[in-house]
Structures are given as structure tokens and as C-alpha cells.
Amino acid sequence: MKEYVFDFYDRTSLKSYNLDKTMQYQLNLLDSLDVFTRKHCENVASLTCRICEYLHCNRGFTEYCTICAYLHDIGKMFIPPEILQKPAKLTDEEYEIMKTHTTLGYEMCMKDEKLRLYAAGPWYHHEALNGTGYPRGLTKKDIPYEGQIIRVADEYDAIVSKRQYKSHVGISDTLKILIENTKPSQDDSKSHALSKIAENARYGKNNPIIVKTLFKVVIDDIEYEIYCTLNYLKDLKDEIKRYKEIEKYRLKMEKSKSDKKKNYYLEGIKALLKSPETLDNYQHLYEEYKNAYQTRKAIIDNLYHEIKVIKTLRV
Image (cartoon, rainbow, N blue to C red; front, top):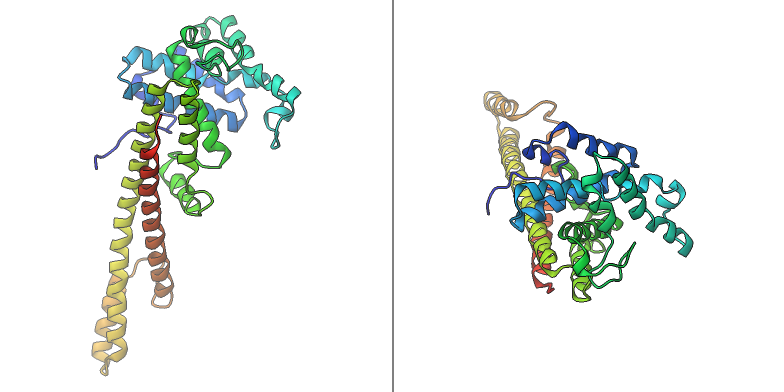
């Protein structure tokens, strides 16, 4: 398995493109959005960037498309909070108001010369190739490639977000979320999202080439999770090995009849203990490390299973 250095949910990933001050202006607009919408925009932009790289798009288009993706939901800053953040299903009237974020975002971009170039993000990301999308019901011939890419990235992140599943928001956060996703009710959240997108491709809403590329990106990302977790497993194994040595010395110390030998093994134990470990609490910590190892091992098994499920999906 190859080593990965690109974290596709890292908001700083675009630094590789040496973004200038003008582009930073567009990205800083995300601070006007609520935290959930802002995070979604960052996720969609990062997914879009990866999809473009897998499609072998040139650097200029990748950068352009990624900025469009960052701004795709900028119109939601004009949607009333009681609708935007409503936990329950929207009414028909509320949904119609929500849909206006595409037009509002487009108009906002067109009025600002620094944003005008990226108006395609808000304008096209909810259009479907078969004409069932909005705001204009365009078909494939009228939807630019950047709009087709952003739609797939947006749809995927929206589905997994509904299941409280996020991948690569940072290694530690990812591991915490993965622990939760060992529960049977959540194991297939990612593959379910991909299945839904594959279904839309079959119905003609999404570009099948882009959907297949997304599958590669997600599998690549899961392999990164496996790689990181395996590294953590190695650290856990080293700690467990140390605790085994302590346990071995403790048992020998308890069996020793002479004070000299008892002190010898006690000194060995002290040399192996790390602050704040003590002879009284190390066994509890030892059990915690063993449990942590088994938990992470189960996570890896689930991740490999998830890859198998994704590979069975057909577009």
C-alpha cells in the first residue's frame, strides 16, 4: 500500500496551488456562512480538487473548479436560519426558498468582479444531466464540466453528512468517528452514499465518468485511513509489548524469595514505567491499551469491508 500525503478533507490542501490574495478573498467569504455550511463547502471543494486530479485535469482548471466548489453554497448566507438549519424535513414552501440559494449565490458572484469568474459553482451545482435539476432544469449539453463535477462532490458529502459520517477532518477526529462507525447501523454509511450516487448516474442525473472517479477518490481515502490506523496499531503494539515486560517482571518479583532479587525486578519495572504510570495503576492502563488495539483492529476490518462493498457498485 502506497503512502499518502494528500488529505482531501484538509482545508489547507490548496496551498499547493500557491493561491494569491484575490483567491484568498473568495475563500474568506466562507466565514459568512454557518459552521455546518462552511464545513460542507470545504469538504466539497476538497473532493472536487481530488476528482479533478484523478481526471487528469490541468492545474488551471483544477484550481478554478475547486474555487467554484468552495463558493457553490455561498448563496445560503441569504437563506433564513430557521430554514437553513431546520433539523426536520422542509415543507414544500421552505424547500422552494432553499432552492433559491443557487440563484442568490450566482447573482452575488456576478455583482462582484472578484467572484464573477467563479459564478458557475453556485449556478450549476444542482443541475442534473437529464434536466430534472434546478434552478433552470438544464440538460447535459448546457451544463459545464465544472458544474457536473461539483454536483457529484456536493451530493456525496450531503449524503454522508446526514449520517454524521465524516472522513479526514483530521486524523484524530477521523479515528474517533470511525470508532462510532463500527456500530452495525452506521458501517455502510459511506457505501450507501456511493450507491445513491451510482443510482443517480444510471437515471442520467450524474456524469458516470465523474461518479466512477469519485469511487476511486473515496477508496483512496479509505486506504489512507487504513494506513494511518495501521501506524497507530504499531504504536499500540509497542506499548503492549512494554507492558508485557512489566507484567513479567512483576510476576518474577512476587515469586522471588530474596529482597535482592525483588529489588532487582522492581528496578526493572521502574525503568519500563512512563510518567504518570505506577506499579499500582499500570495494569489498568495495560488493559486499556489491549482494548484499544482490538478496537482499531476491528476498524481496519470494517474499512477493508467497506472497500469491497464500494468495488461491487456499478454505474
